[in-house]
Length: 505
Image (cartoon, rainbow, N blue to C red; front, side):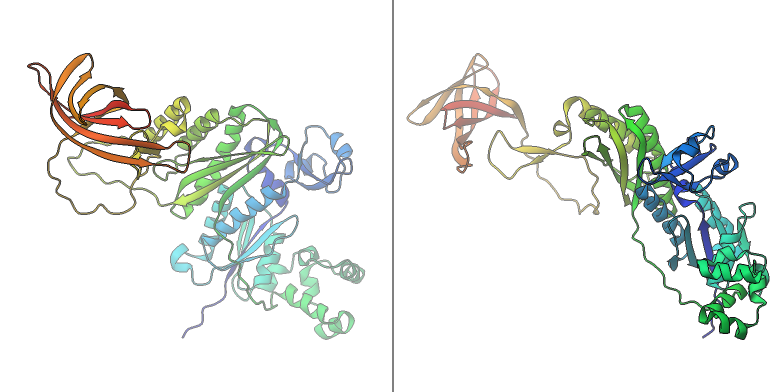
């Protein structure tokens, strides 16, 4: 069996708290922004973008110091948005290889992907790196990507790379030459180790790799040997992949309370775009979207939208969410929102060559949502018969759904009479003698009973106040010289009331 050469791609996104916030705020990406952490008034800058750094901002600055710099936007750190952004990045990395190892820190995202043997799927290592960089940029994150045969070498290179050249591929055996110009900061040295190397005049990995190994071990122990192997790109590593669950979820904490629905939909549109992008990369569609709104006063407002077919039409989802929230508005101002989507298979409908064009399911979904907004959700759907003989509660309404199973074999149905049911039932006056029906008065006309079948007695719900009992008759009657009247009569035994519930054709 041939041994596959090791090959790893490291993704490194610095200033991750700032990038996680700006990915869902595209209007702020071209403005100087800083992320504040801590409780007021002791807040300080924990992350910032490049434009804020050019404007004079730096890590550790207080809010008062930031306010002295013109044009800088301050954002509060959001752990939930960072977690959602991290899940999106890990999911993106998982589309290239199932072996992904997470090395993220508090202020940076870093993961390593085992890409050995993926050449037939994605091409060369450089092509894979460019495609991975493109996927990361599509979700609103800027990262550098380094490909190397050594895990630690790829991590150091990705951390020390410039974003002007975001993708770098190091041929096997040339790790030491690629690492020699990098500063010692890429090794995450302790404070004591940094002071030691600074006193020796060691500032780059090349200078560290040039130190004699035995003398370095004598002065720094086994840690010195490990650091030298890191500088040479020769430190071995036991790869331990993670298996993050595939979840389609986006969260965002609003900068100020929102009461206007249009402003909320603008934010939800950006989040939906991210969910659709992640589902598309896995050849999936969104089957349902649940929106959770965090309200003032610790309230929560949850709604779920589920169209007839899974779809990735962003405008359709925004319209359905808009109509649903208009019909069920939140009772207070909104502080944060979360979108959680359920994936489904992409629907494909193939028509016959001469089949008529069917209406789009999305148009039906929007129409039903508009009708439900007017008459209420409980009054829109398809009728489903109940397992009861009660004439007044013979069905319930369910949502329109498409069958998931294959249609069964055709069943031959013999011809039978159809009944036109009255809703509500119409009152009728019935004349009887010795328990037999001989005439009835219906719609101001008198009918003589020709034939009567029955009665069939039913009753139920003895366990609640809505106890009911009735008897049913099928009657054939005729007026003077007129047509036959075939009807279904029901007598309410509790109130001794006769009604016609339907006519037979």
